[in-house]
Length: 172
Figure (spheres, rainbow, N blue to C red):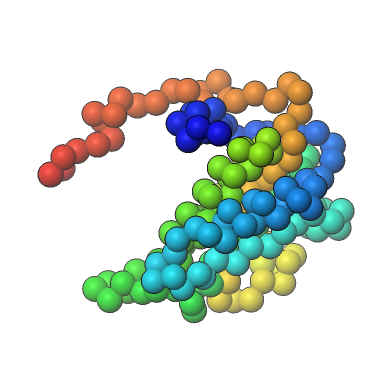
């Protein structure tokens, strides 16, 4: 798929067919995340595949934004494995995990899998429900599935601010 077409046509899918992703598609999506760059190649991302009925029920306890998915990926970052910027102590791990999640979303779209990035969740509930260690921080839930026949982007999907409002050259 042409990259410009991929990034233009991808949208947040919020309506899926009533079936889980195939193991082959799950592995393709995970591999796309696995090759994503991370700060100093520390690879602090941790991904939990949520695809059993019981795990999906746990997910539903943590967010209302599950959209009936049968497969989700909880993308986290391991703070204790993060590259740390020496000037101010900023962690690269949340950014690394974001890059990983973006690779996964784009691969999903390329292979015909719909995805919605969800940040509307209760971190403490996720931590408890999925027994997440204290150094692993939930960043995003990628709910995925095969788009329903009538799935479509939200009305505001194509509304973009002018580039001149979001880009500056040399100074703000």
